[in-house]
Image (cartoon, rainbow over all chains, first blue to last red; front, side):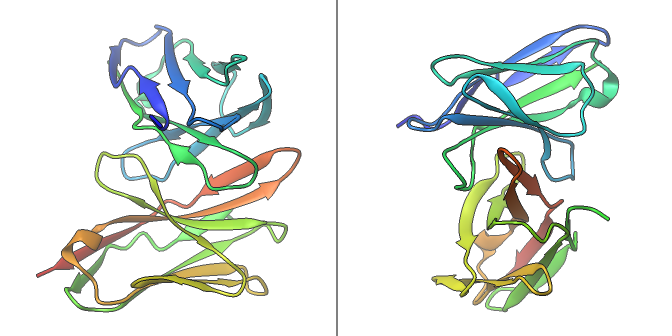
Length: 111
Length: 111
């Protein structure tokens, strides 16, 4: 079992650009959540996908959007990047109410 | 008031010490509770679930107090390898399981 995988591991973008991050959930998990973690902070919930639909959303602007595919993998898209979007983006998969399992994250730097 | 609050620390303790962390949550309908551990520049990893009756896993003991809306983590006989950030996690169902993380408590165990 490969666990949760994310790509890419690191990414550097400039302000105004768009970025797509990818995640494959742990085998048997059908729910994918995305988190943003700034340095020294806990993970902040962005949104959650289940059955290819956004089921929950945190306090993030519409520049943050996502998608879940039939194989449960997911993408996080961020448009019009700002310097403040620099963070570790974590994908977590889960099944029912069990605690989520995290991938290693994608470290995004916006210059 | 934040949905999940933790003392950020840091807690500096000698090897062999006992240390306790508390975490409070605001949603009385919260259903599941967890402690995660996060090492520097790594993803959070599930340490243990927290059950109403309290539960123990080796040197770690977790407690839940629903009346006062807090959970706790006790670490006995601290090891150098326990140095990490400990994240309190609370979930509740609002048509989908929303998972909220505290900002984390830093622990440094010194020789």
